[in-house]
Amino acid sequence: MIFLRVAVVLCIACGTALGQAYPARPLKLVVPFPAGGSSDLIGRALAKKMGEDLGQQVIVENRAGAGGTIGIAAVAKSPADGYTLGLGTVSTLGMAPVVRAVPPYDPPTAFAPVSLVAKAPFLAVVNASVPATSLAELIALAKAKPGALNFGSIGDGTLQHFTGESFKLLAGVDIVHVPYKGIAPGLVDLLAGQVQVGFDILASFQLQNLQSGRLRALAVLGPERIAQLPAVPTAAEAGLAGLAATAWFGVIAPKGTPHEAVARLNAGVRKAVASAELREAIATQGLDPVADSPEEFSGLIEKEMARWAQLAKAKGFRIE
Image (cartoon, rainbow, N blue to C red; front, side, top):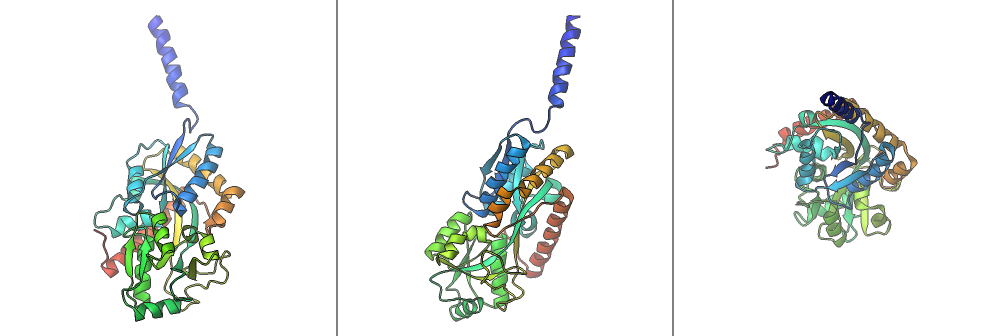
């Protein structure tokens, strides 16, 4: 009789635990780049708003290295319980799996996409000391001094790297690639003139650096100009129509994360992205807030992988 009562109590306890509303404890959001960059800015703003909606703290963990693949690989290896998330990018989800000789992971089998968060076109920017006030002048300078200019990126095989390589190819110039471990150290050297050229989103360069004249934006690498820099032409307007790059950021979870948890997380992202606070934080940095369904985000990742795989094959480009 005593055994029966104990068994009943245990069953009730187990049922209560299993039926406990998700999430029942704090979550972790892995940002695969150092603090201070655009991914970190987005991740922290998103974590705050999602935490408010989920009723649990969302803790940001910066795990940088290897162009963001170390942090994203850690997400792939995490328990699929809905408590570990990652902030993926076009570089980590669309490019790294197909341009690296040894892919760090396979997104379709490693992750459960949750939702996009933001997207933005790249800018072509130079240090104020560079005697070029237009894309045409930069190209002319690079042609006059082959190998004298260099550009920074957040690592080999990233969108920043490939955009610089695309610029070299389209413009017919020779500029040197300098990879960094994240946005922050690259920006420090760009502001100091150690590297002269940069390709990234406005959030990474920081609007105040352009407004103060420390950096000079030469072109928007998207289909239209951006509101924060209305005088800066698009690459097409500047005479280099083929130079285009758009960054995006989105939330992922490990593959196998329960459908109910993914749905709850998607609702949390959508609510966060719709909030005035997050939209302002994103928009002031030249980013467009956007959310979609897990299925739509999955389709985008697969589309990007196919695009970059085709380009890598055509150019014979692989990162060892």
